[in-house]
Image 1 (cartoon, rainbow, N blue to C red):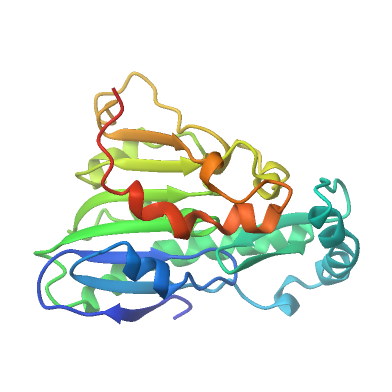
Image 2: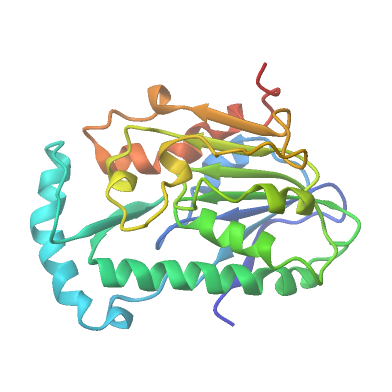
Length: 255
C-alpha cells in the first residue's frame, strides 16, 4: 500500500492525532511534541513519490530547480517554466506535469487512509484529529470524502498552508464533529503559483455558503503570515507552520 502509518507516540487511551506532511516532508517531531498533544500520534506517509515517476516533466523540473530556487531566495516569483509544491521539510521546484502527479497521489492515498486506520487499537472509540500541511491537506480532504463506509470519531481538522480547494467543505462537515481550522498566509509565494484551478486554502479563507452543517462556530480561518518567516524566504515561509500550529489548535471560535 502506498500510504502507511508510523507511530510517533502510542497510548492505549486518549485522542489519536494523524500528522500528514506535504510533498516529501516529514514534520519535525520536536515541534509536534512541543504542541503537548496527548494520546497517540501517528505520521501518515503517503506516496509523494520519486522524480522518475513524472516522466517527461523531470527535465522541466530540473530546469526549474536551476533557475527557480535562486529566484525564490531573492524574493522573486518565477512564472512559466516550473511550478512550486512545498512540504514541511522544504519545497522543490517541479513542472506542472509532476505537480499533477503528486496531486493525484495525494487524492489516491487519502482515499486509502480510512481503511488503514482500522489497524490503530481502539480507533472506533477514541476521538481522531487530522493535521495536514501543503499537499497533506489534499490527503486529509480525500480521506474525509472516503469515510462513508467507516465509522470514526473525527473531531478537529487542521489545515496549514494547504493545497486543497477553499470550496466544497460544507458536505464534509457531517463527517467530523469538531472544527475546521484553516491556517493560511496570503503572502505564500509557493502556493500563489500552484497550477490548480481553484483558489487554495493556504492563501485565503475557506469559503462557507449558507449551510447549517458548517457553522461560523465550527469554521476558523486564521491569517498567520505575521508569525511565519518573512515571505522573501519563500521556502521557510511555506514550511513554517509546524513551529506555530500548537498555539492555534486550542483557539476559541471567531467572534
